[in-house]
Image (cartoon, rainbow, N blue to C red):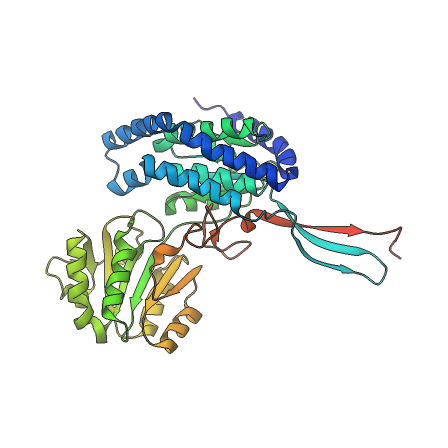
Amino acid sequence: MYEYGMVRSQAEAAKNASVDLGLLNTQRKNDILLAMADGLMAREKEILAANEKDMDRGRKNDLKSSFLDRLLLNHERLAQMAEGIRQVADLPDPVGKILNGSTLSNGLTIMKVTVPLGLIGIIYEARPNVTADAIALCVKSGNAVILKGGREAILSNKAVSDALIEAGCRAGLPEGAVQFVNIEEREAVSELIHLDGLVDVVIPRGGAGLIHSVVQNASVPVIETGAGVCHTYVDARANVDMAVAIALNAKVNRPSTCNSMETLLVHKDIADRFMPAMVAAYEKAHVTLFGDDRARSYQAAMEKATEKDWATEYNDLRLSVRIVDSLEEAVAHIRRYGTGHSEAIVTDDYAAARRFQQVVDAACVYVNASTRFTDGFQFGFGAEIGISTQKLHARGPMALPELTTTKYLINGNGQVRS
């Protein structure tokens, strides 16, 4: 039976360590990260063995193939995780930057500088790479972190975090600065999101259900991330070959991710040239299509899309398709069903492209490119903590700058206020 207080104890240890971690200089933090990357690969055999146990349990529990794909680790993915940590080490330190400064008429000098947030709680599902990404970004930005992963990946996450903590501590990571909650019970999440005064911010990373639950129930500040009902709109003046390539990549490159496309919108004037080639490409990739009546005329097997389909983040080889009469109709659809994550237009019409980017309200709005690029690594930020879909503090891929806040430093020589 779960006993409240276990997570609090870990949070208290992390909060205490956050002071020392926040004072580390750039070189020391980089040394810790490089040691972590090496330590991760040194424990490859142990980590992959733990992951295989999680995979076996997932198969026995009939988890979806897309879920198992997010859970899977292999040598290549582990090496990518290590490389991501090294890339974070190479990035500029976000802490201690002077954003602006001034001297008042009374002689006071004021500087606005960046500082760590303090203690960050990360709640996530079956993606062990998040463990490495989150730890690396938090260490580089001087933040302590407490991690609560999903039960489906608990052995993998524990093995990854153990490897990183052990290697990091040998290189100078303050003891307790990185905490992994090795508890499956959901009560651990409830305790974590109510640790007012200890946890400075919680970031949920996972499906819409997880994110909604944390946002609705947390008493500590939350940065909302992730849920991605992403669209690609093929405009009347699109290059057909380009549109097929982009729409195929956006759906099948890795359908389990939040930046994959879930709905394809096609202008009626290009549908006869575009849809046959697009449907053929999707059939070859084993994508199941759901469409409105006009879209269904291009594939006999296409199922009728329901209201639920338009709002669903499939995270699978499933796709909703709609034929629209205009750019305005496409935008209206996105406004109704989109989640503010990533949206794309394919067009050779400069005016249409600019109009789309101006009126679509999302963290990332693309012209002639796949939504799959919404990723901190792809944007050149190194690893990411998640994709923020809210508008306060951070929006889009959350990397190092988004894990800092600001402090004003004021210096005087005896001034008093009259």
